[in-house]
Image 1 (tube, rainbow, N blue to C red):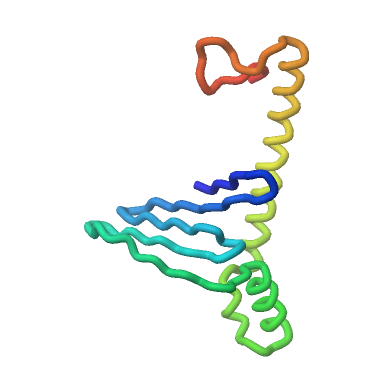
Image 2: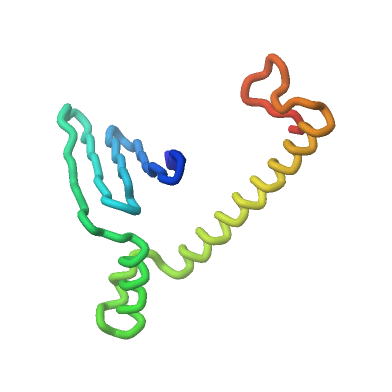
Length: 126
């Protein structure tokens, strides 16, 4: 789950991953990243703080260092092919979202409402 919550001029960002009994929760990844880990069968949550870590700078810095030969290319943790597939996938999500939003706005203008009565989770125009 990825959440961005807007609060006036600030925002909160969190990522949560649940897998095989693990719960990983990354809080404020673009400010002062903190990772909370809950392992299977253990009640206590582990906390890892990454002070002053700018993920965008780290990503670009690692890429430039690898291109310029200052660090081994295996420091880049994703293949170029995977990066391209991720880019294409995110554009498909964006296009689908735009199509749905256009349909929703049209239904609100023509029908005067957005949600279909009595059918939670279904929207007019679907």
